[in-house]
Length: 320
Image (cartoon, rainbow, N blue to C red; front, top):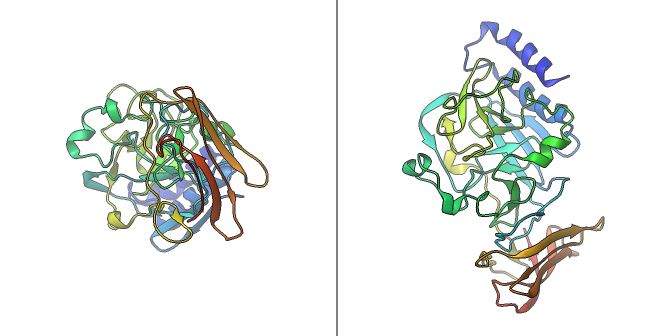
């Protein structure tokens, strides 16, 4: 079933329903169909409760990772079990919601953040472009619109271009993700293919939608992707986060620090056995983060030489 067919069917079902509620079962069907039609249902599962559609994945996409990053934070992508709750009866709220973590999830199961990497935005921040924290302008993102964050988890901060290229139903009518408030996320154009006029998108990068009541969009310019949530989220403070890796023998791991001025020649490689390596150069010296699954489930053996740690060679086992 195509995305346009899904919208047509749900539109018929919605004739007798309020404009902001296509119904729990129909909303669940829309979320499920968005994953299946994109071709990601083998890696991503969708289950529905009375209140939410749960999109579950390991947050580790099957596309190029980390290529093109210069402003690296010296974090790497490690699979992380993630269950994203999408409200099945979305309603618009009265206050734009922000957080320093995911605001939604793409149909391939990868979390979606706002465009910044400077902590939680205030209401005032939403109205002004934060160039110093813009992950696009500071070259923190790979060619696919994502990177690994503090939790060593991969996520998007801008249009997920590589995921969209993989989608079997790629096109303006295709839903590319869902915000936690239950509203869908589309690409740079309206679902009918028409151009989004200047000023049509609000502060959160969204606008009204005849079917769902409201929808978000990606955009070529900042904020590039969902900047905040316009819908009501009763359990907002309990939305999921990916915890940073911990040392197998106890204790946390200090976050990486972006090397001043950025790095050169960053490449990320991996093989079928799960061996991964991020190699790069900084001020003429070579650095790396290499890791592979250990004998313990959810754990990885690391060997590193990073700018953050002064070039000291270190090793250890770290776990989710």
